[in-house]
Image (cartoon, rainbow over all chains, first blue to last red; front, side):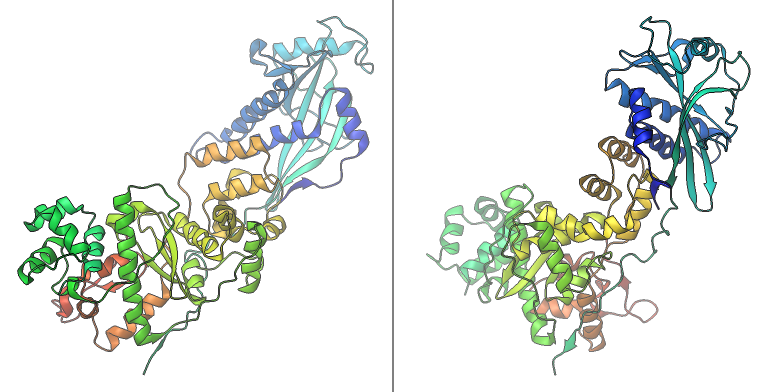
Length: 211
Length: 339
């Protein structure tokens, strides 16, 4: 029944995210909104309904919390991105694979990316490890909140990281990364047992006839 | 001979002004005022007309005084409805007096609260009653087991809202029979807070139904809507009440809370069954075994059975109305008295 970090976040995690103008709670809010929305998929809807709702709400909440802090939404070609107010950082969301969040493991995107993402990734080609050396507005670095939900018994575990891809041609999955900030997974525990049909337990009330 | 206070009680119970009663009974408003203040006594024929106009059985207006009660309403309502509710409460106290002569019930055991913190007050009551951190049991039973008498407000004055009062050392709670099961449980907890003397019964009720330590132990940070709904079943509260409490305890962020509330607004969830009275159920069962019907009780109390049923509406399964006559199968008709 928990949404908690399986291992602790470290000061380094926080520092790396801060360099991008992010906090862990920004990411958690977005992941939470996606998982929360999964349950509203109709039982007879398309099989990817829950995942689609997860993505819609994850993007929506991520932009909601960041726009409130001065970021700007970027909707070119429906890419669902958000841009930092002063740093050359653009953030999107991406579904990864089971290696999401594991340092050194072969992370790849679940889907091939379209023209918008491919174009934006081209900016990642320069100075990949020196993020903020350019003030040129077009030299954005595209980053992703990469997540991968996985059912582990009764728990839903969301693997997560924030990663910067290397330029990838349109129509290919993303599997080369310039930079990865791997984070411990977020765990959503099982639902508590269903309520009893009989409601709250009874209390015995002593009633004695007078003779 | 007419008892002035009974005339006032009967008139206000029926939600009538003196002018309206005078019109119904074929007398003047001034005469009603005179009778109610004891300045004049009506002739027997007038008393009979007044009794009939008020819809009470013969003799009601001539019986002994009915005790006064002081009530503080939490819900804004028309004074007429509040007066009618107070009238119902006074009749219920009379009914309780009749019951107390026939049965022994648990003695009142309500802690007197001397501090002002409703969270602590709720913890003290829970500790004293042996339910430290777990979900509270049936609230009506719990109150009854600790000497509180629980009645329903008759539907015609339910708009006055739930309230509590004391009479001769006995605490009474009157619940709105039109409230949802979750709301009725919350109302019972809130009136418990009022009876213990806390200044913020609303917060007391939340803390009593959803104790901080129990929630912190059982609900982890950031439950999604489905988990909030499932937990609300465990704690027997409405999901929205639980969501508010989780926000207060920092287990939901403000945005998560807003999302959960928006989802809850589009769905129906909550307790299915209303909490009923164990005390009244046992009493009616025992009386029936002795051959005493609700009609018989009502006759003794100089009430009609509808008035009596209004006081237990939704709280008890009782035999109605049938006047003790056998049904087609030769057995009494049982009717579920619940909204």
